[in-house]
Length: 51
Figure 1: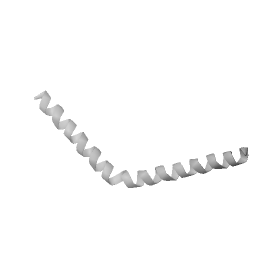
Figure 2 (figure 1 turned 30 degrees about the horizontal axis):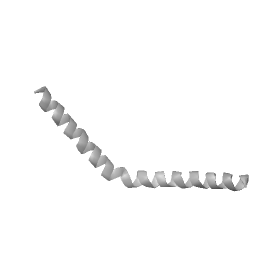
Figure 3 (figure 1 turned 120 degrees about the vertical axis):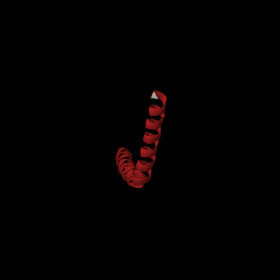
Figure 4 (figure 1 turned 90 degrees about the vertical axis):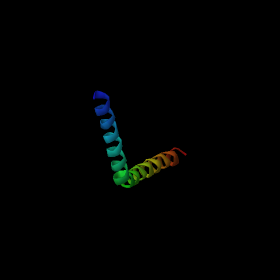
């Protein structure tokens, strides 16, 4: 019984993670892209100031 409950719980977690990924992956990726662009701009600006 314990093994069945553990298996069912793991399947539920997997389904939840899949649904969350499908729903939120695009907004999260867009935010990460914005953050990366801001960081790269700051680094480029600092490098230009050093030159």
